[in-house]
Image (cartoon, rainbow, N blue to C red; front, side, top):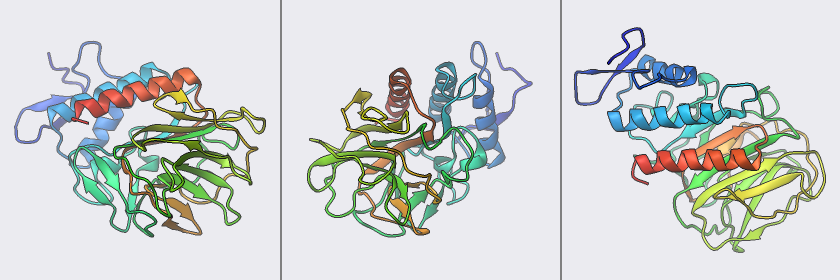
Length: 295
């Protein structure tokens, strides 16, 4: 039964409206708000993708990661979608949390429907700009409580670039995930002071990476996860928040994007520190969403 009090948007290739909130039990407010933004942007969306978004956002609300008493996500991007109408209004670049940090593109990263965005190794100005500046955002992401995450679709060993998400100060302190650098190591750096944390040998770059900071200092003050498994990174103390927008597919520094990764990124998140249980919840929700679109 349709709930006529809810907003609607139009299915691609058809005339019947899909009503947000028409499932049993209705949708979370965050889900309804996201679908309303899709409508307002005049984007078309089919039932497969509508169901994927609804399950993903409703699930993350249930997990306490979006809304609730202690939400953790400032921005969540699901790039592996099928509708792109322009660099500023593309469904793929919308943050699922709110419009505050909708992404834009810098240069021309490669978009592939239902897979995501990719740059090329060590490219400059070929990235996704999250428009999330850690030092000015004022969100859940803080110097000593923060995370960034991404899901890399392909197995790539960087030659001289390799940062799939990150931003840093002129001195080099900051945040970066290298899924697989030229030395065969992966690196998870989150508000790291110098010298930054060391790497972990990585057989393949494919998978879900979370760089997480839970304290200011100490050997367990930050963690690096791959596919929800703690990789045992030796932590370093935190440094000041970077006054640069977080880059995706590349690093952000000195008001430009560079040191890019050739990994294709299907989704990414930015926010506060996650517990191991929350890391697992985020991984499972994103895995289900990726599966829903054929990844």
